[in-house]
Image 1 (cartoon, one colour):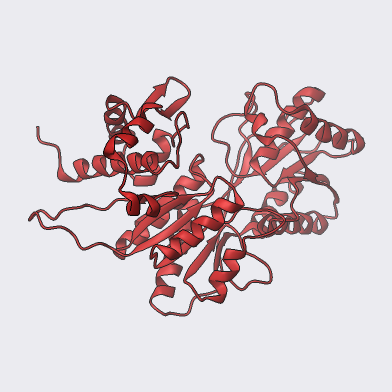
Image 2 (tube, rainbow, N blue to C red; image 1 turned 45 degrees about the horizontal axis):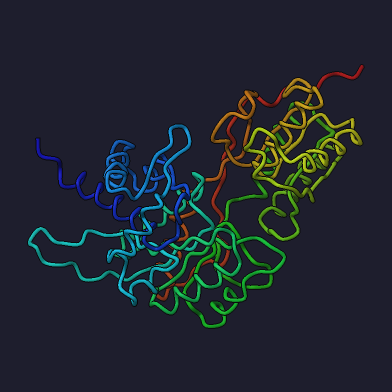
Amino acid sequence: MKKSVSTEHLFMKIRNYVEQLINSREFPPDARLPTEEQLAGLFGVSRLTVKRALSELVDRGLIYRIKGKGTFVSSTADSERSDGLSPQPAARMATETSAVMPTEPVHSSGKSHPIAPTVSVILPDLHSRFGAAIVGGVHDRLAEHGLRVDLRLTHIDLERERQAIVDAVRWGSKGIILFPRSGEIYNEEILRLKIDRFPHVLIDRYLRGIDNHSVCSDNYEGAFQAVRRLTDSGHRHIGIMSHDIRTVETVEDRLHGAIAAINQAGGTVYTLCNVTGDWASLREAQPDEALIQQLRQFFRQNKKITAVITLHLTMAYAVVYTMKQLGRSIPNELSLITFDHPETPILQNPVLSCVTQNAQQLGATAADALVALLEGKQVEKRMIVPVSIIEGESIAPVKSTS
């Protein structure tokens, strides 16, 4: 039976996209590629279509699979690139840190499409559903306006981010959608975009003192409503826990929303917002002991705490590990609500109640704003996307102390 043109087109689109990620060296040999689920969400297709596209690349030796681990770039990909299949010099420079999400190359009549204007989307990575959903929202909305997406990944590196911005402008992008890295200093190229009036929109971040256009989740209200779930269950001694928040305005908004809700309920605030350590280790069998020690000390010094809101998902992982070490159960001995939805259960604990961000809508709103800027329209400086609360099993009524 002949496959539909749309399915065939999507298959080629995914295959070409992954191949460009490899050819651009954005993913070096043995690097893990986005999951089938992430690619399916990114392109709005079934996992079966993604699996077919990846299988062809496996057959060609460009990628390999490890059961239960994921899909990785093959070491033979470098030799294929050096055997005449890599871009020509000018094209290689244009794609050094990027992969253009392809559009259909040929009309049914056989005539080529005119080259569509390009918008650069600069993100830290695509290894989470959050990043993939943002790109999906951006891509779908920009495609409606005949714009291509030039995807550039920074891997949370300041210099990569700076170069991605410079290259996007140099190689003719009409505008930029940027998810900036957090840090003690922001990228000076972002300020240059503002000074040069280059159309751009920040996503999931805003920079105080720089009047950029930005799209963020309603972090203040999300934290306020999350804490209300705790206070409505009788909790008054509530911890607020985070990484170092001094460099991320959006997380500071979460802190302020949480404090406001605790104060409104007449509760007591306990903060631990400067935790440092190897956060990646929380996904492994042996988490960073120095990191967990900071949490153990916090709970031992503040024994009245009956509930916690974590402002990052990784902090929720750390709290779960710490409670296990202290022999305290969630939610019977500590209620917990966190920002962002865990993709997998944490140590077989109850499903966490959480604040979830609408990443698809963040991407679509940023795309709409950028299109409006390109059309010379007035656009709000700060655009806010509502969040939702997912009710889990990690909040219980406070135990009576009588």
